[in-house]
Length: 113
Length: 117
Image 1 (cartoon, helix red, strand yellow):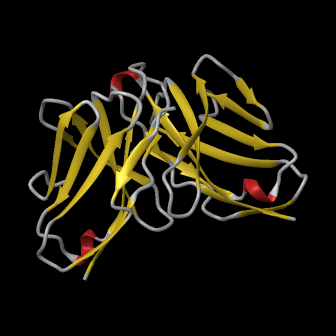
Image 2: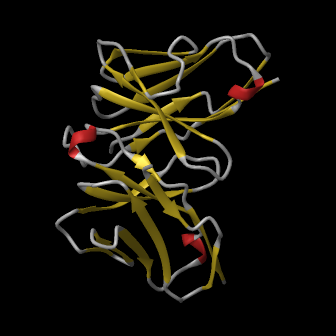
């Protein structure tokens, strides 16, 4: 069956360190992958898009990698801040699934001051 | 830009009644909107794709007669939970793309917390 797996345990790190979150998928052939941030009681907010033919994308303190051989994406936040504390969701999409995005269950990040 | 507004943010209703949730794209037109449902600490589950001027497309296992979707204009989609029961209590979130490109980001509303007593 198709699965998107993110670590269900919260990631707890010290301010200033790099946070690394993992998204693994099985039985998908995604054309692209997106990362979102979700705060409690709010809708997700888009962060980054990476396409299947791209290995890495960066935006300010954020970096995403995409390894279609390992079927994995890594999401990094460098110089983390307490304000980065939130749940981070990965989502897969493919051309043949039309406009639908399928989400992982998210990983909660806690950045300690 | 690309703001999606969702109302109400919270609603409590009695079992057996119906609840309507509105989703509006404020500064762009959306021919397609998506309705998701989220249980605590779980993933966003796609319920249906709302298409302007035509019938919604429902995901497997979602009852179309229970979750009525209407997309009457390019900026408004509504989800009506009919004859609500306590098991329908959940967080419902709508979203839309500002661009027609298949991989463009989804813009989400802030969700509706539905509690059925």
